Structures are given as structure tokens and as C-alpha cells.
Amino acid sequence: MVNLRTAATLLACLALASQPAWALEGKTQGLNRHLVGILWHIQHHYGRQVNVTSGCRSYSHNRRIGGARESFHLRCQAADIKVTGVGKDQLARYVRGLSDRGGVGLYCHDASIHVDTGPRREWIWNCHGHRINHGHPAHSRLASG
Ligand SMILES: [Zn+2]
Image (cartoon, rainbow, N blue to C red):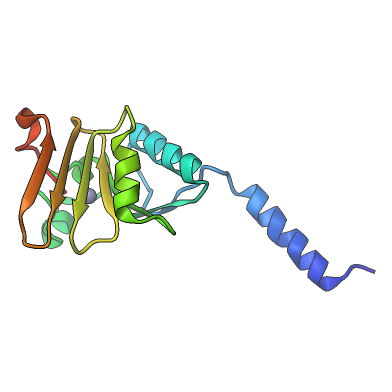
């Protein structure tokens, strides 16, 4: 006779196994392949699922939430992400170290960090509403958000 609890555990394992190890969570639809590659890399590093809290945006949605006018989100080349159990500063530090990343941004009131496949640049919006830029000055006027 099969113990019910064992059966339930077995089913849970099967469900997990049938889900591809690289499956991302959240608003992943339509994301640029290069960007998805970066996100898989992050998942692999932490062994945890990356949750995309904001992915592709329409112009109207982007305007509504106050996104940058030429945001890479409009081209599906940006994602705001978080990883359960990993602080955003820690996550940003890791992503900045990846060779194929573009922009990496941090925001005061957002638990997610911004990652895109544009030119390599970094910024932090601090809690006083000031933007601190790092990286190449030629890119400092590019959209951040
Ligand atoms: Zn963003």
C-alpha cells in the first residue's frame, strides 16, 4: 500500500522536475534573449529563481509608472528583478560583475534592481531623489529605469 504522504512528496518532486531549471518567474513574456541569458546566469549563481517584477512595457504603461522616456523596458531589453533571500545591494554587486550586462540600477523605494542590455553603465537613485552615476560619462544621459 502506498503511503499518502510519500505519494504527495513524490508528486511534488515530479512537478519540480518537470519545470525547466531555467524557468524565470514573473513578467518574463517577450524578454530579449540576451537579457534572459543574463537572468539565467544569475539564477544559476544563486540556485534560486529570479523574479521579474517588471519586464516589457508599453509606452502608456511606462508613462503611467513614471519610467524613463527612452527606457530599455520599451524594447524588452530591461527587467527589474529580485531573488528571494538576496538583498538588492548584494544582487547588484554580483550583476555589475557580469561581463555581458548593460545597465544596472538601484532605486530607494524598490526592492528590485534594474538590469538591461544597453551600454554598460550604473546608477543609484538615492532616497533624496538624487541620481548617482557610475561608468562611462558618454552614457550618463541614457535612460535609467
Ligand atoms: Zn527597470
